[in-house]
Image 1 (cartoon, rainbow, N blue to C red):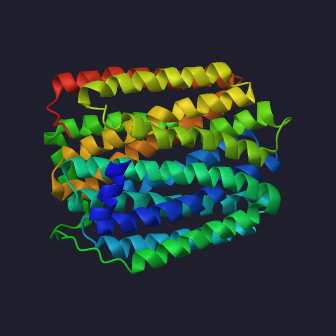
Image 2 (cartoon, rainbow, N blue to C red):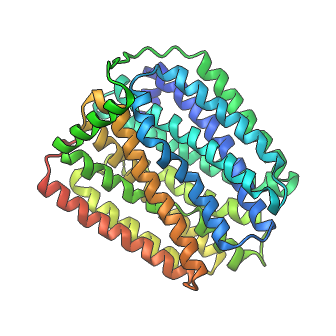
Length: 400
């Protein structure tokens, strides 16, 4: 942990960006619990729960082909301020969703909100390798994951109580207020990076990116391996678990908050324990550990308290897996293509997460047990581990 503190002390821009992340993410999880609590209180079907979970990722998939080109040709601060503004407006309008007839509005607002959030994230992740390098970049990615996880832990846990005591409307308003604070902090931040202006239009920039990927197949493989982490898109699964197994023993909002918070606790602790241990040769083992943790969760799922414990174990490996595979991609591509490649990487990751959310709902509706669905997800991580071992053997991948 001391290494992260030293990094923040020495990098003023990273320190402010990290503070904004903490505030914005913390606020975001208030609305996340509120959204799923609202859906379950409305007694919607498993398909709708899964569709909403999928919408959280689908917007990022759709915009990715153009977002990278925009990022590579626009000043990052200006772009990030615009995106936070969209998040503020979309979050505030969620207070007008009250019943089944308002679901169309919920879908639109989630799409806009998450599109802006995904765009912001891609912009920031393409900014980091321009201001940091080597081990500092890896630590910054790990720090980003820890902040996300810490916000997730506190946000989910506290929002469960806030929703239980004050209702979903208050959660949406608190969320929007958090984004306003983030906007102010970003507005006063001085970000000085070189924007490499291109004479090419957006279409030609996209073509140039595909030409680069064609001659750099290792980048494609690294994007695909990062996409396997999208299998951890458990929001729909957790909501269905609460509805089927725990609704009779604990309030919906509290169950959602505690389950997400317990997994997020593992997400925070994981990189602290594994950050120095992980290297290219050990990533395969990390995939296997993740699979075993998911299978343990499947075995303990029906017991609420044991499921909380299993959730912590599931989270232990996810953050390190995410941050390390992300850093590998940043390390192994040219700076000119940072924004575009990171955007396509996020597109694949979000596609994986959206597909996972869809399949959870589809299989649950088709009569498959939640335990069986969870076992299938674990199997996906085994495949990811085998694939990464093949990548190391057949591609030239630089160490971090």
